[in-house]
Image 1: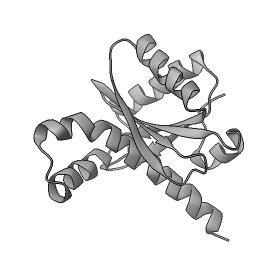
Image 2: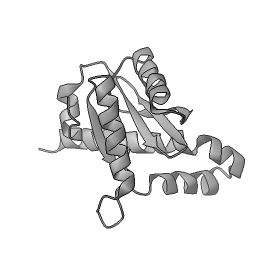
Image 3: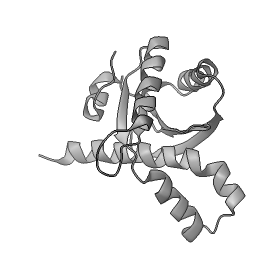
Amino acid sequence: MPTINPEALRAAVPQGRRLIGLDLGSKTIGLALSDTTWRIASALETIRRRKFSLDAERLLALADEHQVGGLVLGLPINMDGSEGSRCQSTRAFAANLLAKRDLPIAFQDERLSTAAVERMLVEEMDTTRKRRAEVVDKLAATYILQGLLDRLANDRRTP
């Protein structure tokens, strides 16, 4: 299955299955998990990147464990709307993952997600720099996944 647009996820994922959101960084992959009704995203874990095969193995094991039916990858689009090398890297990750398992994958614009999470951790939670580094990636994944869940919920309400 090729990557699909977010609106097509509902038809492609069996009912009752969850979604995993990913924030792909060069050193880590932040993960978030939806509930089965696709209303709430929660931080799951952060994978320290090693080799693609090991990273994919961990991700797919979590997908099996949590009965995941689809993935949402944050797409790091530039502020002007163009796609740079980080987008190419994210799309390559998705293609390589699809070669391992046929699982619906959609992209969600992640512009400013990490900045929003960092700001929340500093301003609202007064979190130490060390603690921020430990949680920012999985919280950014949560922000990305929740954005997609909210978008899909709003699409259902619009006549």
